[in-house]
Image 1 (cartoon, rainbow, N blue to C red):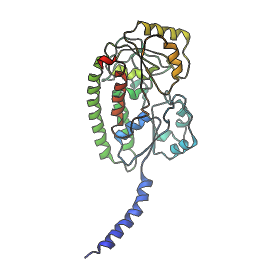
Image 2: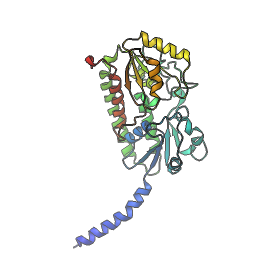
Image 3: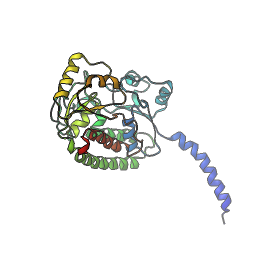
Image 4: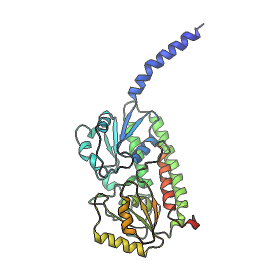
Amino acid sequence: MPNPSRTSAVALGLAALLSPLSTLAATQVVTSIKPVELLVRAVAPEDVEVTSLVPSGSSPHNYTMRPSQRRALENADVIFWVGPEMETFLSRLLGGEEFSQRTVSLMHGDEVPAAEAVDAHHHDHHDDHNDAHSHDHGDGEDPHIWLDPALALDMAQDIHRALSQLEGADTEALDANLARFETSLHEAEDNIRHRLEPLANISLFAYHDAFTRYAGHFDLKLEGVLTLNPELSPGARHIAEVQDKLRAANQPCLLTEPQFNRQWWRSITNGLGITFSTWDPLATDVESDRNGYVNFLQGIADNALSCLPEKTR
C-alpha cells in the first residue's frame, strides 16, 4: 500500500521541478499599445504572458521607448503592433533584421477600408469591409483600426493565426477563445448600437481622428475634428473652420482625450456653448482580461452618451 506522505513528497518534488520549466516555457508576447493587448488577451490561452510598450498617459504617435522595453522585445516570441503609421517610434526597430521575423503588423493597407470623412453628415456601416471612404490622416490610411469592431475582429483573427503557429501552441484553446470573442463582440455591437440611438441628432466633434472609425461603425454624426495630426498644431484656417461648424452644430459635444493638452482645446472653444466628454482610445483604465476589449467598446459608448443633455440620459 503506498505511503501517503511519501506520495505527497514525490508530488511536491515533481511540482517544484516542473514549475520553473513551465514558467520558462510560457509564451512571451509584446504588444505596442493597450488595445492590442486586450485583443491578445481575448484570444490567447491564460498562460501567455503579455507586455505592452506604451504606458498610461502616453501617445503612440511620439513615445520614446525605455531600455527595459527593448529587452522585452528581445525576449518576445511574437510582437504585435498596428503598423508604422500608428507606432512611428517602432518603425525602424521592428523593420530591422533582429525583430522582423517575430513581428506581426495588424494593419494591411489596402485591405483596411478608409474611415468616413470627418466633414460628412452620414456614415456607412463597415461590417462588410467593402466600402472605402475618403478621409485625411497624413499621407496614409487612418491607423486607429481597433476602434472599428469589425476590423478588431480581423485583428483578433490575425493574432489567433500567429499564436497558432508558435511551437507548442494550444490550438484548441485558441480556437475556443476566438469563437467566444466573436460571439461576445457581435452581442456587444448590437447592444451598443441600440444604446447610442439617442445620439442621432447630436453633433459630435473629436480632438483628433481617432474617434472616426468608431463613429462610422455605429452611425454617429461626427461633424469634425480639432486637429488632423496630434503631433502638429493646426493652422488658423482649420481652427476657424472648426469653430464655424461648432457654432452651426446642433447641441455640439467635443470628445477629448486624456493623452493631449486640455488647455489648447479649451481656449479655442471658449464661449461656444459646447458639452465636453473625455474618452480614451488607448483603454488606459480598462482591465486587461479576456473581456477587456468588449468592455472598452462599451466604455466608449458611455463616454459618448455623456454628450446628451442630462434630461434625456
